[in-house]
Length: 325
Image 1 (cartoon, helix red, strand yellow):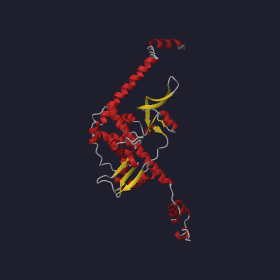
Image 2 (tube, helix red, strand yellow):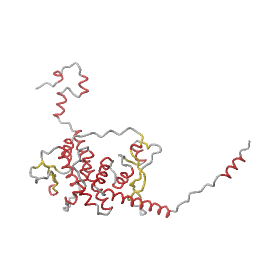
Image 3 (cartoon, one colour):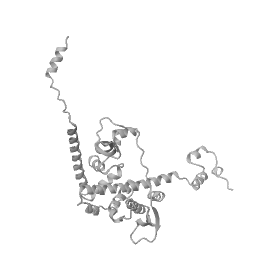
Image 4 (cartoon, one colour):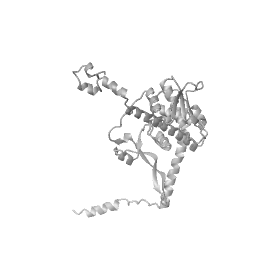
């Protein structure tokens, strides 16, 4: 049977394939420009919405606390498009991290940084509009659960790794829990407060100190609202009680500003929060790595670690204790 005739008839009935029009370099550039302008217009709307009321600002700060570090524009986009995400990377970044994006996963619009070469041969940094994927959309070993720390451990972490001195003082004015003093490059903190109150007080002043570039022009009051928001994000990150926070005043201060200025405010608060978290993480790491001679002796007195004690079954507690000199 000759199938050629049937094939020809089938081809005659088929609709002609429409070729995709090829864009010139100028047309492609114009299309990308329009895409960026549309995205920035949306970002302006999302930024304004954050400061609509205290509940909206609190919701955004909650999201910033749960999400991995991102530029403020991406946090705004992800908060609107996927409020449950926690950790996002591009397809290639997940591949480099040893995870694969699940088939059929739909990424989330994001501004993605890139380096490029100018016409004169020099390198510059820019961005393109692309997609990022949440860790829940990937395959691979499940990420470890973040450990939970008590408030007193978090306070100790500040003392372990603070970039500025922390000085316990009984001379602070009434009602002042802690205060960063630029000329001393030190945080003065009141003694005998609860661990949670102490953490919040020091975190706020660490955030305030992060805005000091040591040029003699530092004004703590200029960054009080940003430091307040940063403290909330850090406290939320570590699961502390944040019921005392109220954002009505912050919204009043920012509601009449241009979206670009509002975004700068959010970016400053976010950056200060990240600084506080880095200080705490570094301090916790130093605490975990440090083993004092006293601690080592206590372990030996107890008969070693739990694993070592299991290997010594049958021996009395007295036998495994070190002899006194």
